[in-house]
Image 1 (cartoon, one colour):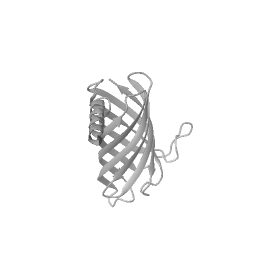
Image 2 (tube, helix red, strand yellow; image 1 turned 90 degrees about the horizontal axis):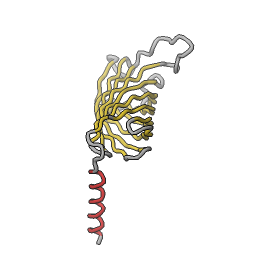
Image 3 (cartoon, rainbow, N blue to C red; image 1 turned 135 degrees about the horizontal axis):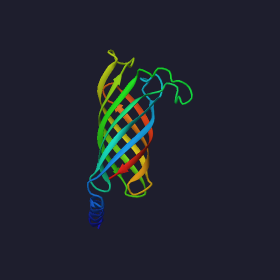
Image 4 (cartoon, helix red, strand yellow; image 1 turned 180 degrees about the horizontal axis):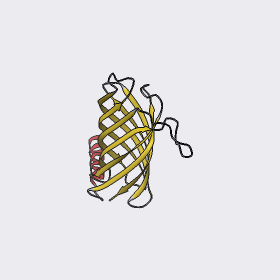
Length: 178
């Protein structure tokens, strides 16, 4: 009885994830957020943003690629006063991975990424620049406004494995699917 129940559960899961209501759907996502350092490499929190592209394999699985730059503002936004010199510390993030989500109007998702980060002008790097292998994990919520557009909230953790740099980036963004 247990084997039959397990077989039925496996069959149900496989057919559920193989449904392909929007095959080969593409997505572009822009985001902005802050980078919170947990490894004491940043002199302070950084405001940054980026862009992500996704190719949906089926309604639950998407392959992603993203670029993010964390650099802007040492004291926050400067709308009414002239901004001082930008900080010389930058993090370039080049990542790709997989996102698993539900196919609902408010869709929670999890993601895993692999790639690299390039840090520039950090006191922790001897030459001021370093490029390192990185892993990332995250969770988020997509709020669909229409069938093809929506707002995304996400929290992603990035770990540069070799230098033990670990930071967290909460973001808000807008996506367009076509």
